[in-house]
Length: 433
Ligand SMILES: [Zn+2]
Image (cartoon, rainbow, N blue to C red; front, side, top):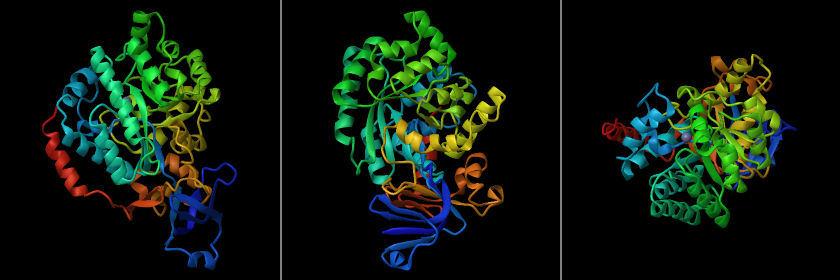
């Protein structure tokens, strides 16, 4: 058993919030989380005891949308709108990615995520997802994996893509002690014709799979959809059965109030990706409206080709600030809501149970932060929540535990040969753009 004591804990549990205390981990779950100092007889039962002096402890961050395989395209094609960027930069380069490129790109992304405190992520990618699942199992992270499907292809190819998603689900869903889950992922309404979306929906129902898709990311996408099909994409997806299964949409930038209500009716969750939406000039999602409607909202970075980093602290800060400016009101979002989105609400959006709080019985996914720094001063129990949203950075993370196991210790990655992977990544990246 592991104990961490003498540490300021942000529980994300509404009743107890944050306090100085200790916690114990038994197997992959928290067994005790308490205020004050632990009794000596409990300390004596431990295999490992860590002093958390000058540290803050909080749930590991949950990144609800990304594309790890495209990490080597970071910095390629900046300052372009979504469709031009996809058609001129992303798709032609990705068409030349081999197995090694995708694996190295995914490892670069995982290293960056762990280093900045992310313990759970969603990955939508169309290449080598079996290898991705093996990497997640080996490296100890928690993930929802989706074989991203573009339906602009022959019926045989469409069937094959759905079959690959179903196979991934049967081979990996629930593996790694439940760390890996698998969802069905049509890329977007503008890349998936309605008959294909119907097939996807029925396969998801048949196999009991969650659905994840990009939706209403740009104004142009919505306008083209209306022109082509005579209806807006949210109503269309509802009609095609996409919302009959647990569903998570990425972006939801161009949603009106009726559409937010449709999402609410079907318990569709939203991944809010503010930085990617800003960088691609897509717009700003109506998050305060979604909060008022009671939608489940998580935060996501999207890929490092449109962000351009995977630091969830930056994403939280942006999500917290952006809507205040747009609405000219500082109270439309607050640090508690934003932290919830980046932790237990994100886990809920991914349909992962018992993740995102520091509470007995929850999965022991947590991070430690070095609070002894000028930008986190004054550091105490009452400033911790504010600093974590408005001032902290991913580089403040010192230790990361996932499912009760240390993956990052004293700022060192335990399961990656970082120097080697970065060398390979730089070498392989020369082949692209
Ligand atoms: Zn995306």
